[in-house]
Image (cartoon, rainbow, N blue to C red; front, side, top):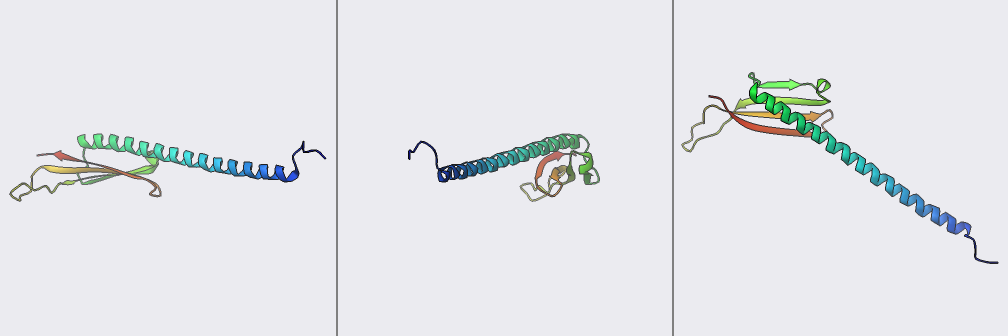
Length: 123
């Protein structure tokens, strides 16, 4: 008998190693796709926040709060708040005319939440 062919046991071992390698590759590929999707969602959130912040700087929500539903905004729920900032001077009095504009955006289910905040002077 010559050793010119693979035995059934060697073939089964090779198939097992191949199956493990393919499974590991599939898991790694799924992780890369999930990370790419999350990065895309966060980038979209940042773009929406920056856009809404620029828009709210020229037209702030004067009643203190404005909401934009996710169904009309690429699935992002946006909340804009506009309130007087409590910044004290060196002698302990409040600095008049300083307002805080805060914009938060979150995806349905709370998977990702982004926030931006800026101080505005309005005498």
